[in-house]
Image (tube, rainbow, N blue to C red; front, side, top):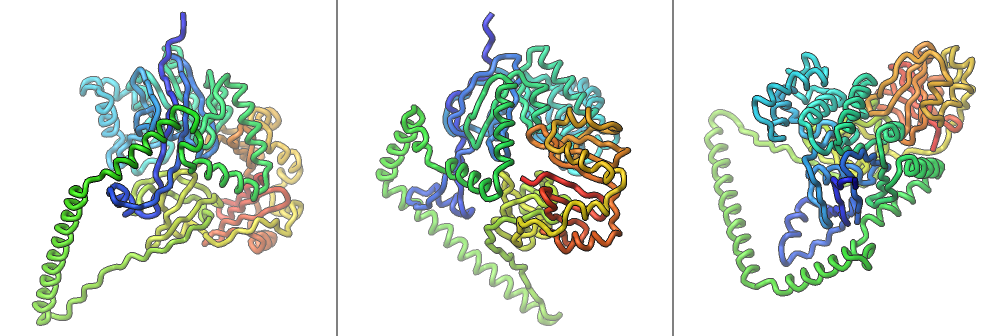
Length: 543
């Protein structure tokens, strides 16, 4: 019996227009506008078929288009061009997606279930199972805005799987939370697979992708790099990650710039010989003809509308001025009335910046009310500008806002410090210094190897940013997994922050938090982060 195609994606592309200023969006719709916009192709000419009951892993570095594809498959955003045939109901599980931050967890259960078409009595019957799976306890009665990322993921996952969708799309939702909850999610995914459900699983963790997926799709800067048998694709992706990590900082920057330039090229340049290229050229020629044939009558009417609006604004402004003048005159007998309006100070920056606090919260709005993601100390962002005390930044493909105090935009040197690793051992606990070469040798090895090489594993889980961790409590060591499934960092607990060497580290630091409690510096081939408050040092192999 031939497998049944559940999803067919044919030549799908997603394109965004990039504007330098907000008012250009309005001008761009006018027939006589000459606003020049730049196109960004988040996805370009993606095609694949997925059969019923398959689990498809999706990998790719940040900004590759994985989340864009997830949102298209979930019908959250439309395609720009191409054909999309989805035969069934989809459910997207991503951290806080579809959750109303102002509602309680219980209210969100009702709201999301109603959105999935469930009736009130069905929701009442499902709610106990959802509560049991999410394990939020008394927090279920609290507003979601008070939840951590892990709690939001628990709630979102619990609701989505109990609405019984045909197609489940999981976008990094398992990257947060503890190992117990992660295993519970895997067990539920296995149940879905056995019942013939189709699953898309997006993750940076190669080990997670390998354990879940039947086939793997590698998306690279908006294009399909590979799609096939899981082990083969993951092997190629792992080779690319290793190659990329070995590039110098300048080579990495040049590579990213070249790929971003490619994503900004006109669509017909990259697919001129294909059907979509012909469609793009045909559409452009048609639009050009339509623009030339735009009637003078329409333009005159539009101009009249502007004149009417302008006249109304002018009249309303005069009336407002009269009212204010009257108010001032009437108040003279009481005292002087001061009418000071707070001015918005704007500044264009356009340069790289670095997170200068332990954890910077990025928001999707300028008022800093809707949380988007949290990123750690030393993370690189691109600062576009500043409005009052808020930075507008780009983090990968995410446009976000954060308090200006969170970001350092001064130049960061890549030069190594004059301090050697042997000097830093003075502040390390004895159980680390006695075998430090062995512990450091575990970096770049797989998590499985590290678990087998060291004794005394006390916990497995995830750090606040979704990376898997192995904690060896008796050794005061925590290993952190990277994107390629290899161990990327080691955190040493209980360092001696009273040692005079800490002063030298502070003087040699490349980046320092405003409080002075966080230091970043390069020691030999390692990037080192010293947290004097938590008494920890994190060592990561320099890229």
